[in-house]
Image (cartoon, rainbow, N blue to C red):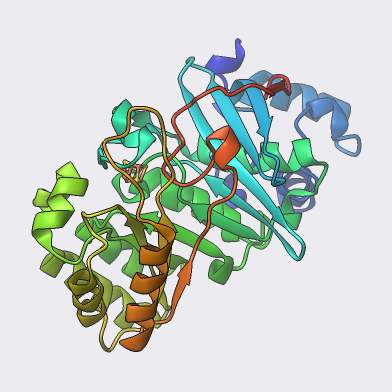
Length: 349
Ligand code: SF4
């Protein structure tokens, strides 16, 4: 059987992995604890069983992976999937933690005008195994055990709440104690605001954090920035967010990309603060990252700081996220498969 016709082992829930009891736990440990990417590496599994597994299941989801290291230490990974489509992840090491930003789709249907991925259009949803393997591959390439990656954000290509089944299944394996054993508090799912997906997340019991990419406090401006935003009004989105908060008591993060003359006015800072009265929220202001052919300009630094100060004055905790990885197109809104110089092919997945 060719690799493409085999069942991805990562598609199986931990409890449904082949084997039973001790053997099943051993296999889960090889996959998620040690990050093995070859059957031969699983030396304490019986040889015959390994051969049987190799006949039926595949371990890796990528035909090829390229790494683009940035001057600031972050690394953009470009994954070619087995059907030739491509997606990306960004690894960001900080002195006290290792963070990974992964994708849920090839391209994205939301079409945000400031986002290079939105310009690409929609390719397809990623499978559960493709979502998980982004994490496992980065750990392998960086020489870490997979469980050393303690912070994860679903903020790369795609809208996770339009790929709910696969994203939630991947999250279950990430949070499972025999999986990646991530703490739900250290996993953030970022959405452009899909109310029915937010309700599902609230009811799912996964307990991960929600980040809302609002980008404007009024429907009119929002529809200019996010063409698909007319499907859901801000009022509907905020109702879903309030429900999520009531169910989970998790602080909501608000992502707000500042675009010059469009959504960076003082009245907009005040209106934004009004929406979040009574909710536990933290605002991340994102100075916009330029890319070739983009129809926007970023807000000047002084305006970014003024907007932040106004939110703080209204009692909204705010920070400014000066982006990492700009030089390799790995910063927020820049993920669109650009291939700057300095790529390292890091082999087949
Ligand atoms: S910002 Fe996010 S939701 Fe909007 S187009 Fe880009 S990837 Fe999609």
